[in-house]
Length: 296
Image (cartoon, rainbow, N blue to C red; front, side):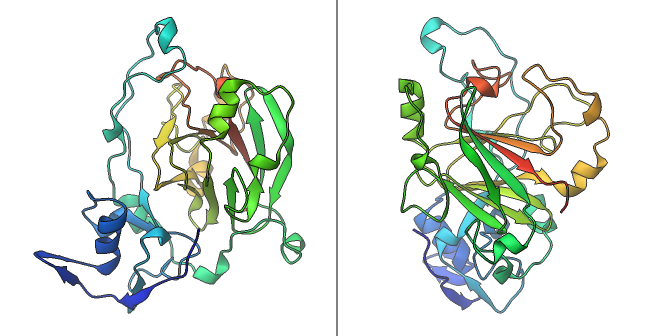
């Protein structure tokens, strides 16, 4: 569960022969043994270190940070699988989550207090919403649209794992065993936050999530790009500036349904697209559709 900030002076700490900033050292000790550089880390929007790149203090709570996803290598083409592998992804290397500093250095400053983890509080309804969230199981939408007014929202499986959109409360008759197994993997789910440079998703669960959005696709490329985000990592799922520059999107014709330039799709635990046996997201057991408002 989320804890408080642990603020310390922004000076290097020496442990044995290793000298490192405190948040890097604690992240390496408690979460990511292969962590090398503080620019690989992104403070979560609720942390007091969020948007404060060079303050005198820094939070060293390792669970107030996520690790940034980097660009992926071009995926291999889809090949037909054997019947036993029908529900498994192709053998892709986990090294596709290579590190890049660009996302860490390009985020504008913002006051941490501007963000909170909730949805429709009484004060929030006075403001306009910035997205609606739909939860799907294969081709069936389950429950109502969840409207988000606050700057961040947790989407999780069961109470008391956060404030926000609780997927475990949504009932549907005659769920398949595949859906039941996948729902059990949602756990703490994701933290979705609207930030100055775009919309970010942080994987709080213990299993990968898979993401597609117009601003993650390669411009002028008709191949669907689905990004794998490992537990503890975050990714900018929608880039406002890039969205404004994308003029080709209206010409694209996707086989898996209507194309929405302001829609983000996130699947829990199961991938889809050219690299997987599931070609369309409607073949995934549990997935989210993030419908972004046109206004920023």
